[in-house]
Picture 1 (spheres, rainbow, N blue to C red):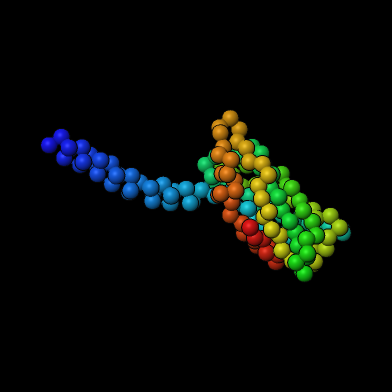
Picture 2: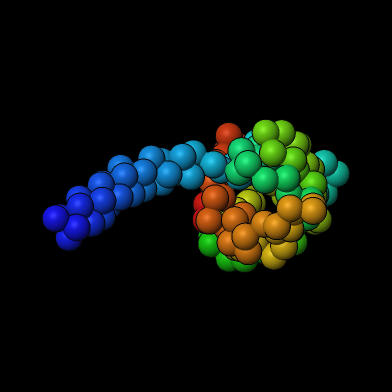
Length: 147
């Protein structure tokens, strides 16, 4: 009888875990660091890019540096930028502007999210891959923005 009870307890625990894992995965799938290329506009001889960053990761991010690469309309790399997007606290939205120096906006064919250089929280620990794993890209501009 002791073995039967142990088996039932183990089976019950397994069922609880099996039910909880999809719920946890769904919850984590909704936690995102949304990075949107909102607008590109010519300013002097530069191409100004406007970015909207929305943090729903559940973590305050004090330092966020992202690696972007701009390609021309022929697919040739024209500029690489390491952009400081932080701090961006949880459930907040920020707008950042960066100029692509000496580049005509009409010559920018796409922008690539090349990687996460820095992702750090304040006093709370942030998992190293949090920014990269939760990053979601979007573009409202005429220029595509991809990962």
